[in-house]
Image 1 (tube, rainbow, N blue to C red):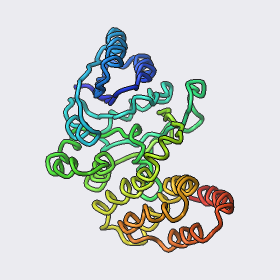
Image 2: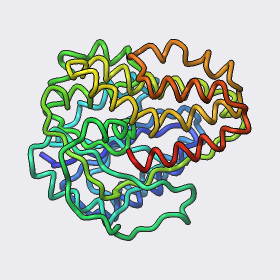
Image 3: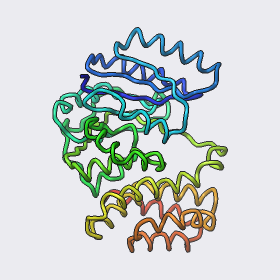
Length: 322
């Protein structure tokens, strides 16, 4: 049995997968399975991608391609637990692997952890990539529910114990087909049930920081803001409400300032206050909103638009203390 499966979902117009495959080919790890789920339907692009896959089949010993249509929730729930390895990592087809640092993680895969959350560095173009080991100490630490919970939303950074994951599937498969955030739910369920989850501060993944054009913003931004609430707080509510309210508040505040508020500011810029706040009215009720968050949102709502830049500066200072 291989120690790790790297799973990649790739669809139409995602020719950047060739760069990720090039990184993986340089890992030179015979104990790693590489599995690509191709869900694209554009015949012209599929021809190009099949050529890419054929090229890398010669370079990556354990590479297999599966063709599977369907939305994210369906593909994830159907395939994430179907492979035979000790651990599995799902990585985005336009993300990249920091080779020097990623190789260091393999020694930790010899332990029977529930999972490991990796760290990442953002990039916009390939010129921004720097394949040099960071100065961060090469160690892992126990997952801190308060300070690390927001990191579970970075899909490409979660190494999961497949044996335990399969146990979760037996009892939760029906729900996983319904939720829009199956991976967040699985991770919170694994941590809540088995604990023994760890975090690494060593940057192992290069996350493609996509630039959003006006067309994307118009179609997706409001939904994206709602998903920040739903993706974190619904799994938190389902799996960790046994913690006291003070603990839940700390987790909520950390996620709000680390993740949600940046999308909130972007939504305010393009859609204004009324539409933005109406958009998240239901989502704000998923969990009891901490007083600090409630006050910040009130200040944002009452402040003139030109003062939002000052609030962004305040946010950065708060982040330094979190």
